Length: 181
Image (cartoon, rainbow, N blue to C red; front, side, top):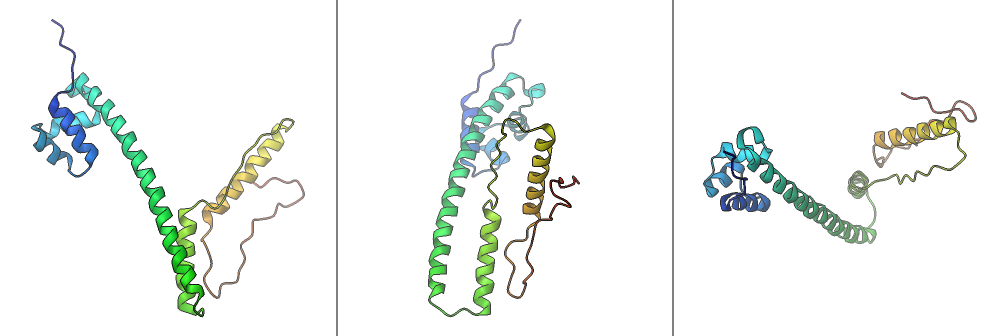
């Protein structure tokens, strides 16, 4: 005789709701819903070997929940970053009214380094034009790769007293590609 189709029961929906709220651990959610923690872990992981099609249904709902949570987090990060930048702006405007000293410059350097780490510093626009040979395309991608490696190895704004300038390595000759690593 065939098994009846699996459906999520009220306790499973309650567990999903508690997971989305994010205030409790899996063990606490299992206890609150009357499900053993081992079964809830299996459902959460989509372990259909032990839990059958119910695990696949639960995992599918978890995927939807994770998408909603990710969207909320991205929105919060964007909003928090905007609020933080406004506060930094207010703080820096207040600092303009006072005379600069070494401690102020250290503080400004910390702020600039934090901002540079949290925001992209290189806007890359890739467009492939008709008529480029495969060699020209290869050289262009090598050049972009060198720019990306340089951007990743950058250390932010130098503090007071460091006067060395950072420069991209020049090619060895006109038209020579940057060697691959």
